[in-house]
Amino acid sequence: MKKKLILLLALLMVMSLFLAACGTDEDPVDEDENGEAVEGENGDDDEGEDEEAAHELGGLLTIGVTEISGNFNPAYYSSSYDGYVVDLTFQTLMNRDIDGNWVMEAADDWEFSEDGTQVTFYMNEDNYFSDGEQVTAHDVVWSYKLLSDPSYTGRYGSIANSLLGYDEYADGETEDFPGVVAEDDFTVVFTFQEPLRTNIVNTTFHIMPEHYYGEAMEYGDTEGVTELSAEPIGSGPYLMVDFAPEEYVFLQRNMDYMYEDQFLVEEILIQATEMTTEMDDLLTGSVDLLAGQIQADNIRDAEAAENIQLNEYPRSGYGYIKTNHEFGPTTEREVRQALYYSFNLEEFVDEYFEGFATTQYHPYSQESWAVTDEWVDSIASYDFDMDTAAQILDDAGWVVGDSGYRERDGEVLELFILTMPDHDILETLVPMWERDWGNGLNIQLNIAQQDFNSILDTVIYDSDANVEEWSMFFLATTITSYDPHGTVEGSFHSRHIGSGQNNTSRYSNPELDQMMDDAERIMDQDEAIPVYQEIGEILTEDAAFMPVYANTYFDFYDEKLVDFETHGIYNWVAAMRHARIEE
Image (cartoon, one colour):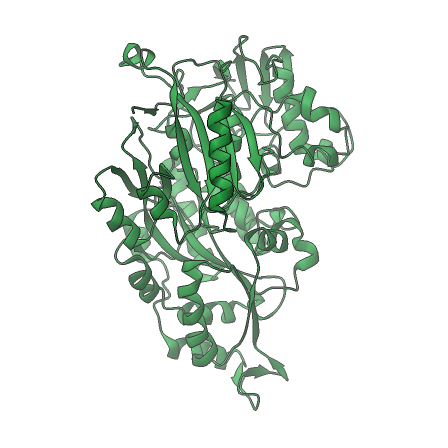
């Protein structure tokens, strides 16, 4: 094993494969997974269990990604690429199978209280963290206290904020937190403030060992926990053996993982690859798996390759533009609408994706149960119309002045746009913006290039200090739930404005806040559909953000990887539970 690792690392050093940041799958859990509970057993179906148990552990799988930030702390990571490592090294109490049903993970069983406010989990007693310490209910309690701590600055506080006593605990009024309680070493009880449709998913945060992460923390001071990001210790199926910042992560199967017949790939190398060379890496065998591929040329090359398999599915998510709702001209609805009308989405999709994507104007996943064909056809659309865009700006008082740009009361209409270097999507988008927004509408554009992590710092981690530094940015998101609530609540509720929070556009609409809060209380999915559709309509009419494309995803992988099934909400990490390598 050591010789193999040395050879791999030497090869990586020679190839220098790192390139900062595609950003195509940014917000990993921006949209918290929400859904109705369906009781189930552990991830294996009974049928075929004997056959799977006979398969042997083995093989190396190399996954190419475009960004490795190096934050593998479940409470603080942001990039979905870092999230891959988190999901492979940590456990949750339960998770979903490929059909969306709940299946057991660190817990053996669970039950609801009659009034719907409590969920009790009975944990497996033969379960250990990678350092040999037993996984207990106390670790679950500690993990949720971290998310609820007054000093917590991560993005996942919304997972805990509906628990009983959260407000008092998070405000520093008491160190007692009745929302998550260990009845004994292996029984943990979640108590929520009220019965909500979304409560159940908020019981499935990653379990962090208190004895490791808790050593660096006391109530009101979580700073030390943020420093434990590069050396994860969890109870998941893999251990992180080695990590080179911005280059690779090397994982090895955790031989103490509680399910011996699952996750049968022995070694996983996640390595940074350049977008310009990733297909060559795949076709020459330097990389075995490229997930979430969207480029038409790459799709055709993969289809033509004899040793490459393809999984095709509608992406649960989209590329989007967020505009600044707190500073500058994009605080005005008319300016946002004019930008939307003058953004030729159809041209971009046709030119870049060549038939493998569509446009959409609503904030939800294509997989969401809130989305129906009839509703999509009925909502506002921003079909390309330069005349309409110009008229909107004229009516708002932004007219072309002596400077050659649009002005109002002596102020030039100026946009500060954050972009990433060497990003092929942006290499197509930026010239279009310069042509239509700059030359077509006479808006002064300032295009600033920042690497992926710098953009995250500007619009997320240190957003309060940088609110006057930008007008818009482009990223993309993968939505991990069928339930629409987390998608809109996390991104558009005013409670999530601020440094480290998910409302990066700093959008605030008190009436919509109340609608989202009320919608979460609707337990029946059919009753909730029209409410979320109305929420989507309001956000679309307000041009709260601009979805740019909703594309088809392709996972390309070497034929040696078998039993590998994915879809828009069941990604390659989840699929590793039943996949294996046949050389």
